[in-house]
Amino acid sequence: MSQRRGSFPPNRIVCLTEETVETLYLLGEEDRIVGVSGYAVRPLRVRSEKPRVSAFTSADIPKILALSPDIVFAFSDLQAEIVMQLIREGVEVHAFNQRDLPGILTMVRTVGALVGASERAEALAQGYERRLRNLAEASRGRPRPKVYFEEWDAPLISGIGWVSELISIAGGDDVFPGKAREKAAVNRIVAPEDVVAAAPDVILASWCGKKVVKDRIKGRPGWESIPAVRDGRIFEIKSPLILQPGPAALTDGLDAIINALKEG
Image (cartoon, rainbow, N blue to C red; front, top):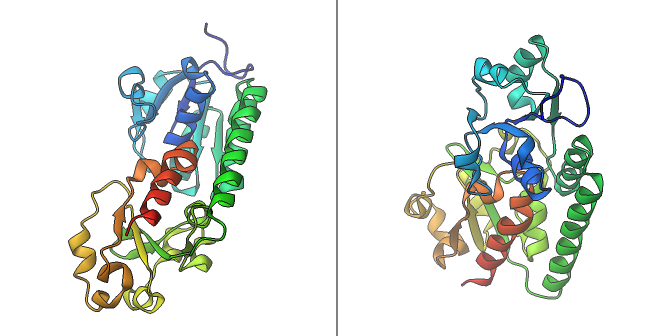
């Protein structure tokens, strides 16, 4: 059922990142989605059900406008240029900016509120909160391996806030917790020798959309002394599971971290 732009709740939503897509599906509100990011893969059927209108830092503005969205969901300053163009065209935009676990839960609740599904969103968020508490409790009292999370390989970029928090819940200690508080990737660049000095027991890598090459990690000069390299505890976590600040990270992403820390 169509409606004039600006009425509530919005019937035509374009999502420029994956996490709002997954959230709307989990809320049973997927019929409102008329366009998605090309990176949207959760649930898998979204690939065949919804037209793709954007990458991450670029978008097909004419295609978005042709969909006559009531609102567009965007994420972070990296999409500021897209947002500016849409606003100039008179499109309503909500830009999320979650970088930690409380922010992810707030995003879930906010998406629910924006589509008139606050009760379902609250139940979903509370379910995630219980899960995080229970898994954190289950990891208490166990040996805590030191963990280096690599978000990119050239330059080396360490994990962002929600990733660091999930490592802690899974029973590990992020070797660069100060870096994790930095929102911008450029501020999370680490020197190879700093990783060597940190001596992580486990290396988790997710190279933001490209396949992790473990041999390349092992072959870095001086890294043979790192316990994780020496003991073969290098694990890839697929980027859709961990680098999207939404439900995937709280479920399959966290599970992947827990399984990696158990191995070896």
